[in-house]
Length: 296
Image 1 (cartoon, rainbow, N blue to C red):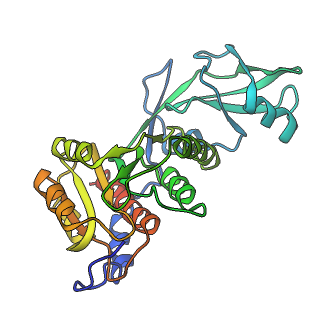
Image 2: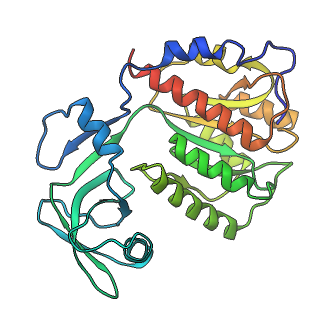
């Protein structure tokens, strides 16, 4: 990914700018109990979004204290065979949609675990701008695409969509399936409660439709305004698009079409960046920027 060479380095004054962005509270979630509408304290938010208990995925969650669900498959294997948990051990279940419930293992047999809730289910709502990443990473090899998906998951991207362009025109369906598994594992590791969506690849013309419907769309490309300068004048929105081109960058025609559709070109410094590096640099900077908007 080739970046703007003529502009001053983007990150030369980044530490001082980031200090002005950092919110006074480390929490980035809102939460409420299924049985209560009272607002939680900051400590409640931190405990509920990043608890100390082992956490496992389940499509079904008990909504009330005392409710029970059965956990089977790979999550059962992880509980019983990897962590060797036993009856009465406390764990948490989440559903990838913000639902979280604390409880304990009531029974373990050869096919599954019976989980009983010790409190009502909580629903934690995502905060800040929901970034949708479109990146042309179909040609990446050697685990680089896995790394991109893993880090986007950890940083809180709402979705990642492989982008098909003139210089990156193919990605296999099997690879997308693998990337979904990578994202799921990363969500568990970082204790993220909203699972990132790995969408099927889209063609460039479809991307233009997304850009035209978005109020906030940033396109990483050469010869553009430095990112931090560009976002200072951006209006506060609930979602936004981040677009990163392939190895060798977008063609001149592709850039022109994206800007005509409503995108804003942004530069990522003076050096040529790999696709995955540009994606993570763009996302990480904007996650911190959007978090700072929540405190304004």
